[in-house]
Length: 91
Image 1 (spheres, rainbow, N blue to C red):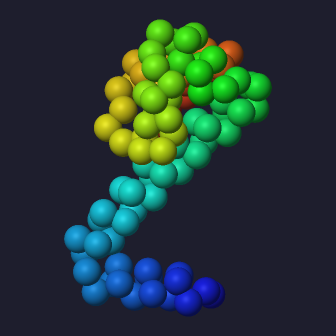
Image 2: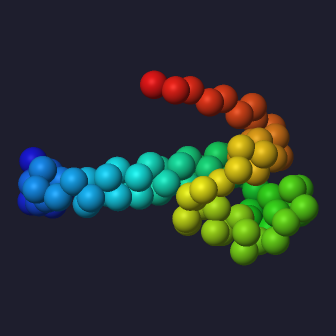
Image 3: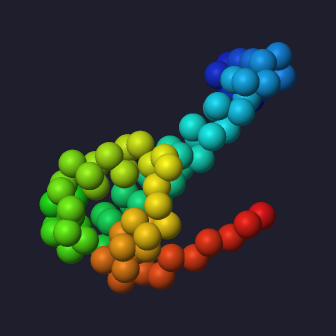
């Protein structure tokens, strides 16, 4: 296990607030990465995707880099513009 992973695991055990914020932040980050990858796989630039969903390139960048508190309708527009279907799962 890496030194970073040891540190994070230890800190999460000692600090419940850190643990909650870390997990939430990681999920937001992961969603942004998934959206960026889907856009790139579709061969679109941020500007091209923005035009498809009637928004600005900066909005696409913000979604990909800080995917937090997004509306489902925004996620659905994003997916549809990439020729994908939005699927939500509760695990």
